[in-house]
Length: 337
Image 1: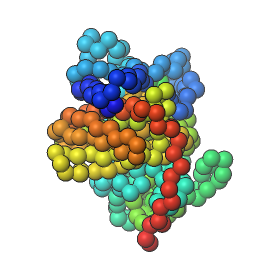
Image 2 (image 1 turned 90 degrees about the horizontal axis):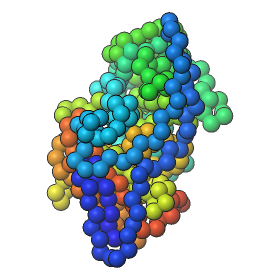
Image 3 (image 1 turned 90 degrees about the vertical axis):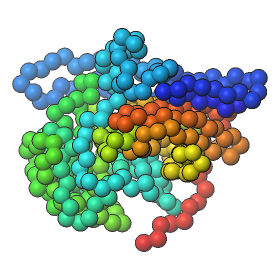
Image 4 (image 1 turned 120 degrees about the vertical axis):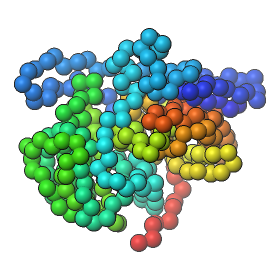
């Protein structure tokens, strides 16, 4: 039984009489408290947390739908797609260690994305906001004070996510050029890339945190950074029949017969899916066109077709026949220095 739900195209090909139930939405892993009002001239009541969104079916791709055609409110549609952030550096996201992935041979699950840069490269603000911390202070990570981020900057964006504050973390600077309390505009220089903290080479570590400024509230920045060069993104779910996420399984992306890219589903529930997409894997900055998505599970292989649209997100869901939601990963070799 092969079953998938694609946001642009919904399809299911059966090779048996059994019916695999699809999900309406994979559960969130971090429930956000009702947000506190940001520091503004006027105080407005805190909104109630949004309810989980159902899966769109039919010929829908991200915000190409309208409230009238989809039945969703404008707020619900805004929660689905939010390419609000400019890039802090011009490099590409390093695929070796994506959001939700484990470092090869290690146990630490990545809660941000790493953007390639050289030492001394300028790093700019991704959007307007206020600097809440800048320097090399120790940072609380899972209850332990750590210097893993090295020289870093925290900022709170002016824009909120349906009433919740948005925090951005930039890490591993060689030098910061802003201070706590500064208001910066999008594209404004805030520091220089470096290799401080726990890192094997120069890059910019970027985290998006929603609701609270701590590592348990991260979201995948790949679904917040604006796609460049006319590309789009693919967000995917790999879940069991009860809607539980399946961790650390290989997902491959093909163009015709050619393997374009490969990733793995999020390694652990310590990272969170997006409120709108409920994903546990992402392919980012893909040229428009039709692609084949393949989930290899050992005893099962699921194959789906995805149409990528410039500047939009396409969603694909794979529901397994009964794979366990938790997988014990096999040892992997340590990276070569």
